Every structure is written in structure tokens, then in C-alpha cells.
Image (cartoon, rainbow, N blue to C red; front, side):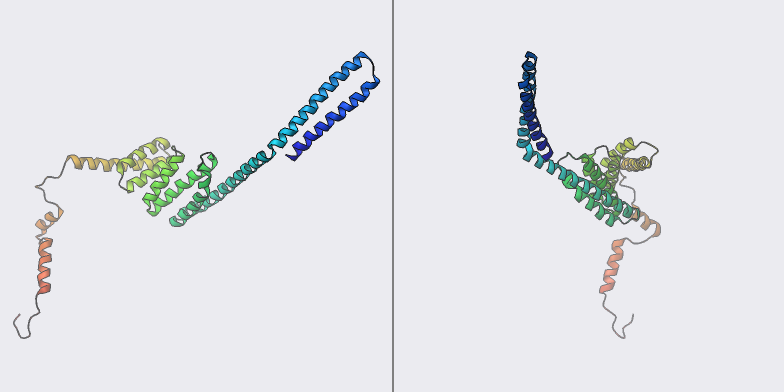
Length: 272
């Protein structure tokens, strides 16, 4: 900004000096051509001087707000780059812990990376930070599944899919979390969607196919149980065991043990 102001001031001074030189030179020339040239040169340098003054005034008028805005933008960009680099380092360390099946430690490292990126993704105008945050959330969901925290894994997958709806890993892991939580219909939808995103032949596609097959079998069994209820005349497992091995029912065993425990001890010298 200081260089622009100095350039504008120098431009104004140059216009004044050139106009003065032309004026002194034209005094010695008395021809008609010299007077025409004098008018043209004066008009050119007068325009140059006016342009320099206008440029200087514009620079002075916009110096303070422009510098403040640029400084804030530069600081925000630098802070975002530092946060992204720190999150990438935490994510790499957490991946190594996840490979050693240290799920709780990996979750803590993923959470540290997620905390540093959250303030840059609230406005929605930082796609670079959103990409890294989406990856961190998806990885933390995998660690939560390994540790058995299925609700936390479901929450992380939903947050990642809100940033990137086409993230196949988040869709697959959400289906796994829903399967563990008993949400079989929703898990089946996620399995079908993940299989469409990954296709056949890839490791993630094989995992999605295995999940879909498990859910197909479970949903088919549930449908058969709803359509074909068990007849009332058939014995259940406990009744079948008692009939085959002639064992007393559990209630009779408990009643006999209760009376034996409350029976008074025999008196000395009495017949047993």
C-alpha cells in the first residue's frame, strides 16, 4: 500500500515537471506548429496529472479498510492451514493406533483432530477443511465400531454424510452400526446403497455385499416368523426335554428345595 501511494505521488510530480519543461521550451518556438504541439503536450500531461491525483485520492480513501480486510483474510487462511496440518497429523497417528486395535486411544486422537477443524467448517465456505473433517469423522466411526460404541459411530457417520452425501465408507459403516442397534431395515438400505457406490470386487464392496446378505437372511426369517406363527399344540424346548428325560419341571424342583431348607433338624435320639 505504501508503494502504491509513493508511485501515485511520483506520477503527479512527473506530470508537473514535464508540463513546466514543455512550457519553457515552447517559449523559444514562435511557429504555428510549436503552439499546436504545446497545446497537445499540455493536454496530455494535464490528463496525466489529474489521473495521478485521482489515483492517490482513491488509494488514501481505501487504505485503512482494505488493509484490515486483507490482514484478517490472510490470518484466517493461515489459521486454517495450520489446523488442517495438525488434523492430518492427528489422523495419521490415530490410524496407527487403529491398526494396533487401540480403539479408545484412536478415538481420542480423532476427536482432537475434529475439534481443531470444527470452527472452520461452520460457515460452509472452506471445502478443504470440510474434506479433512469428513475423513476424520468417518475414521472415528470405524474406531467406534471396533470398540462397540455403535451409537457414537452412527452419529459420526451421519455428520460425515451431511458434509459429503456420496461418501461410501460412511454409508457402509452407518449400515453396520444400524445392524448392531437392531435397525435392520435402515441398515439394509445403507448396504444396498454402499454396494452401488463401491461395486463388486473391491474390499469395501465385498463388505457391503456381506452386510446385505446377512440382512437379507435376517429380514427373511423375520418375515417367515410373522407369516407362519408356531402352532400352539407343539411343545417348546423345555417341555420336550422334560418329556424325553422325565425331569420334573423347574417349579417343582424349586418348591422341593424350599421345604427341605425349612425342615427342622432331627432331634437327638429320634429315629431317622
